[in-house]
Image (cartoon, rainbow, N blue to C red; front, side, top):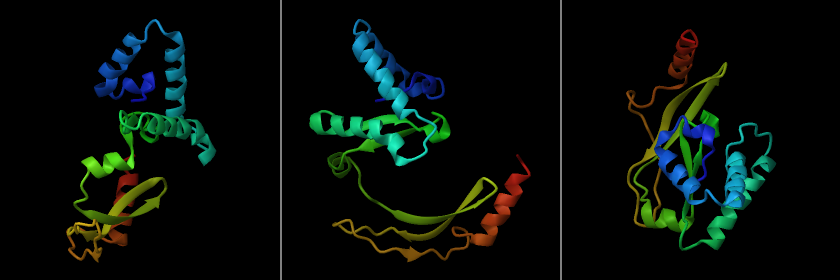
Length: 161
């Protein structure tokens, strides 16, 4: 778990783990400083290119390679929503062991003036044992609304801001 202290104010569920780590390492200023630096890297809001992820990507790779049997996932704040949510980076082994593919959907997102609306397009609810599937178009009008409906929703939402 990598959490920037500012984001814990919005996402309290991780505070006990964070405080436990800090308490366990209260006399180790070096580890606390390193984790603070790494947490800041994972919490970067200003991302201009993929190069801005180099330190957090290298750290994740280092952890996954050197602690294969002990660490299979890393939880970190979602900076895109300013710490309100979180992301999980998982090893392929973790995914294969604990996650089962049950359904697949494709969606189209429409944007206008900084607002967006999603529309379902295709789905697969029959996943074969080898995890293959076939996407079929969604034709039910109560599920797929279409481009015009999405644009109307965006227009309607823009008046609420």
